[in-house]
Length: 143
Image (cartoon, rainbow, N blue to C red):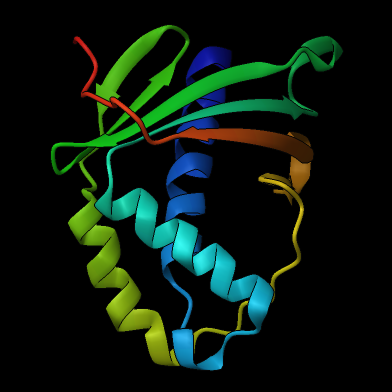
């Protein structure tokens, strides 16, 4: 059960991050948010491979967890615990959600070099993630 909770958490973090990147209104953004929004659109419209390292309170001894996400061929693939899965959510779904959220966005941004902290509360507590993006020669994974 521990692995399924951790896997679910990392998968949701990756997809939540993608939705957050795409959910900003270009007309109401400051410079930092415009940069975040631009990255979000690039991830959703360009083949992208994202490597994520997360340190989370729910991991014994604070051991970091790695995950990978690939956006390619109109699909999103997530690798957790050395296993690739294809997400039911597509880049097109996220772009559609962005359109629906565009007028209600109240996001603020601060430049942190692709790092972010999340406090999910309760026993899961806080986590810290660092991400690295690659845009060249990205293909869907072998499944």
